[in-house]
Length: 181
Length: 176
Image (cartoon, rainbow over all chains, first blue to last red; front, side, top):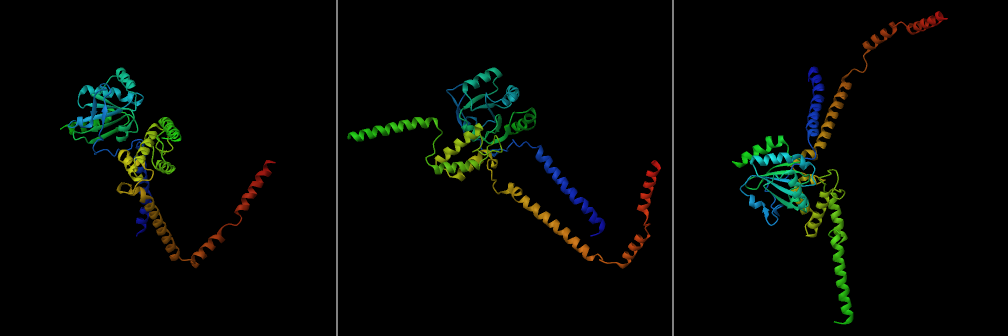
């Protein structure tokens, strides 16, 4: 090895190590540790059959929604960040692009009904999961969460935390259009 | 039925009713200390997803309570530890396990540190070897160089530090 090549290596190796380290830190620190990737993506949505919030005599089951692309929005009247995404859900409901079903998670039905009466009801239907069992089946850990489920009943996307305009426009709605075809 | 038998039956009924009334408030009771210990151990190996650096056993989060209840119910239903772990992993991902499983996506996590250590050791060995070679091939004694060094030392004016001292003294004298 010649002297100049030696000198090059002496500089370039630490520089390369530094750049790799920088890239790892850049990506690693930019991630939100609260967003745990869901193992449900690409798997059949866990089946449920639950009582509806407004029509307590009726139930809604995953099988009833086969053949439709739909959103399952997990919410609760006690959930503060649900209020953040609520106007967006109302807007989405008005467009009629995709039906949104609400899973009222660990909540009192009367509180939930009052909350929807006050803030507006974007849901095609809401179902009651008072003990959170269906929530556990869906791996819910931070309300609000939103799942996109396709015609075959397979989970295609999961939004952890409030819906955002970016998430809707860049990920969810394009995926909805693609799945509806 | 004898008199004593009737009293015994009554006592038993009372005990069962009282027991049921107490049990209604308490969390589902584990039938044995062994199961209790098993649950405790299992809960310390599982992560609470709300407060991510706590185990299910430590966390006070609402979800942790629900998951502890779920784990207990599964254990009471006769599921094995591995089955209970799989049940939670299917819902929350490997993240619920404090001890990540060895598989394709965690390969770097498990072996990365050892690979780094090996790389560092290898570099160290290379550097040491090069140094050893350099010192072995370098001439230890070069008479010509030594003569040159001696000449340089002899040439140096020996009085230079003293001259500076003298100048300082002179300055002091001047001030007085």
